[in-house]
Image (cartoon, protein in one colour):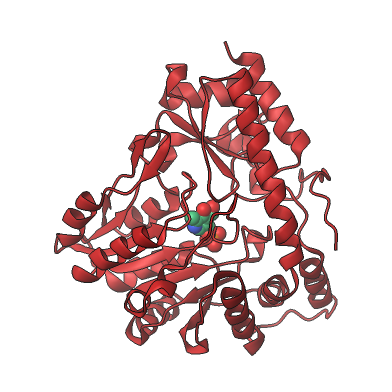
Length: 389
Ligand SMILES: Cc1ncc(COP(=O)(O)O)c(C=O)c1O
């Protein structure tokens, strides 16, 4: 089927967090929503059909996770990422953030350290703090417009006996890196050497741009797989985050049992009736959507980059290798933190995500979500240009 990503679909008054919450969360109802990480594109038709078909059954009692969920996950991970996984490794959950939270509760104690790599998705930090654990940030190194990992610092942090867990963002939100084999191997080896369990959050792994190739951490080596909880989901790829369904791959049976037991203890594993039918449709019938979506996002990235270089050279795009989230280096504007977000939100009327939300080393950056029809991106850039001096 042919999809038209130029189509503008109003999301106002649909209880959309991105569009209807912009006043209360961002503080300006006039600001164009370019913040929450979902897309403004229609969902693939097979997903829409699956939801409609389930809705039309007219009874919405308690569901269970049917075998189609496991088959769809095995098939997708093999087809798209070349990794053979087994049915007994897979756990259904209602999202990735609940997995992070539950892993922290199951495998760390109050006061233990959890390693993250800032700047990073803020919901890595929040559950660590909420559970009274300690953040240990192996800050990414920013050099020549590109991010990399400081492995010596990571080794130091992992060797602290209080470090129990590492959350890897692969590919990385917001800096857009697709980690290479050698980088993933070094991270895994360090974690294994120091008894640190790894969560590999691969929610963005389908949206890899410009010929880059994503490799699941666990696919590289069986030893890495046995130390890793890998998080997949169709939510970003197919714009269905509101349906709450994700597939978690846990080859080590002790980690699997510990994670599942904590979920049961929290009484937080029950899904809604639409989650599994939609998930199965996404992972079995929607490859054609993804194949059209990637070039559209690549074109938006190119448009953004060209526009900045031509018209606003003091705002620089950190070239994303993955995701539809553009990380903009605004250091040359000479403002940072709240002044910088005030410029974008209240002067330009563009609702960006504040850079410091992703860590202390994000204060001179903003994140802009470019998963929108081109006209919306053009509108956002024209708004910024009108205030750029
Ligand atoms: C890296 C990463 N992990 C997890 C999530 C959210 O996961 P979920 O909605 O499945 O809890 C996001 C959303 O932006 C994300 O960027």
